[in-house]
Length: 459
Image (cartoon, rainbow, N blue to C red; front, side, top):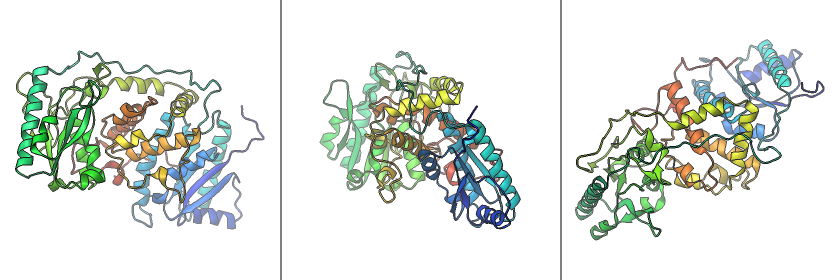
């Protein structure tokens, strides 16, 4: 039981037009409510960035309350309805990481509901008082610097859907032929593809600008890189018209970039390559086990690979994702156990930003971690900053991540970023029926709303 003398510290982010007006009315009317709440007012609940909530917890808040006007009464028409979706995802993410749901609460309070405001504040304060102080703070690990809770890695037999050498050779010849034709016809200025790296058995991205250079292009079971990441980089932008070799998962990233108007379709020629799966560390990559886009969803030229390859239709997958069992195992832990597990994972982060560098959807000119006025995320790789960085990055990819797993593959600390991305992808699919990278004509889920969106967690 928590110490009865302990008083929780709560930060409330509120809409200045409605909730704050109701709170002000309660104060001027001398209505009594728990004094534990520090109010931060903003123009609209739609302006309450989840990063604000992260900072509140990072700086020691025991609980956070978010409140805005009722649906249909927003001064900015739909700001609160857009916020509802963001907070649905944010709430589930923090719960998955191990923060008790009661520590993050939401309410609709109008300017005329001073009585409701006092009731909400008293109820939230009492619930958090019952929880007591957090056993592990923001970024804290157990004394042994270990979580004591291990989740088995996903295991995939290397024989599963192993690419056939003849098929690979035929694809490679076809890629070179198409690339040569494009360069000779002056249809593109550069072809981005795969080439042999300096290390044996490793492929690397190559940029071919002359027809004779197409002999550098290769295609094998080690072409893991998602080449679409280069399309938003200045180096490739300056080259002009681009041809790109794209697997199914790479093409999904192209769809997402088109949705966000980051690439010009008229300046892009896609060389689609049917893919049976890529090998990683001697076995089939986890993302390839359940791949349902063996044929890219968009392309201008489709590589012919001959006979002997099983190509599933888009949306079809015959196997369960092994990571789903890992996610279920984590969710079966207590909140404290789950929190300890993820704190140990994030404590290994060295803030090299390899995850950001390889992600095709991380294209901001100035990343939030490099913003210094104000400095939202500490630049040093300390425990608090590591946790905040990984939460913010996961949120920025929610509803956008196409599941290429490049971030996990590139992470030198082997942090299970794929489990977080997969968890949010499942949530987005269940809640809003959306999967990123399949249809450029559909709005990403966190940029829109439906009046009937789930709201049972809002008081």
